[in-house]
Image (cartoon, rainbow, N blue to C red):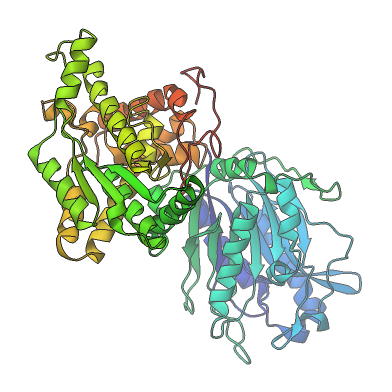
Length: 607
């Protein structure tokens, strides 16, 4: 699999002032990391000597021992295919710099000097150290497969951190060598800074923090190293360990690069003053993650209370649409399934927001050829439970007339037979809306729109599409969560709807109505959809990721078949997406007016 690289940060057990012993400890950690497939590892600020040596930094014996230990470390790790970033004090004439050395293949590839030196409380570095010259630009190291930069502790707290300038050069990873102390609230603040910088730059941010072995005379160094990427914490080390510790994270560089390319605020011309160091590193190992989440939409958008926020967004958006269309009534087709249930709740919430009675919501239940008594009963009970005005319109006779008019046998259950019902339902809803001076609210979800699993000018069409950017798995999860917070009949209705098979009920044969039997599991489709849209994953990568994520859940044959179905249907359904109704963006959007623009006649082999 391409694109994944394993990075690491370490908090070694320190021998304060003993550079040789510290270099050997770091060598041991680097060797173990290399065996684990790590491509690059960073150690804390001044890790060769320790941060808390005080005025000993003035002494030549300490400075010389640090440089000798660095050279010895480089020589002893020359055969390892891993980059190491190590902190040390570095003398240059009369100045002493708080520096980081980038080591690979037995060589020192570059030295980065700290730019911002703290002068407060337990940090008074200006007594011993000199800041990097103001005209010295931050360096970016490009290995050909991994582009990274280095900054040191307080540099991140600057008004314009060096890493913000590196972003113009498209860094994939920023390593921060830190000796941050730990008092109440500090670790949370440090964590937020790293996470936010990774989000701001669209990269991975790996912070190595000093820990056990530093002096505790006036402060405590608790470790707390962490790795963040694109605003999320991928790995985090606990505080106050007595032993050396390493944490790793598998970073998907292809995804980070895709998201940076997709975000024009990150696409800036790099200042010419920022140099690019291009060492030859052809043998950096790629990673194969052991675990990948099966629910990427929920991971990305599942903030606390997200299910209630969906209703709030739907209500706010729909209230605005009702205001500008001078309408105080809504029409929803209710099938007894999950999508129409969520749309019904969103519509009811919109009326609540405006202080309008829920009786202004007209819930239309339309039994057809494949409808079951259970789902129609569920639809009617749900409509009453939310306080809507219930109307039942049996469409069977109208569909029979239409089939006869076009010369189609009622015994042939083909796509025309199915779509006659979908279009008849849309006509009924539109006409009732005209009678009521109301808006027809669409119920189709993001997964169906992505797959083209809707009838053109049937359920494809409405006056406002509430669920258009909510994938099927999130619709189901939202109903489960809302059920737990509901009372009375609504609680059991939402619970049973979210647990029922997914079916359009268009043909009398119940087995033939099973959408997932025909398409493949929606859990897989939503997984493919997220990584295709949000992360720009190519077809082979989608399949490889799914095989890792769903190992043991689905057979390889099911994953492969669903993968082919997803790609084919997504590529060929753009003509439907090019004319979808308006609807609020809640997760990802396939609206041609917003997030997704694609030719409807694209080659079927693309992507």
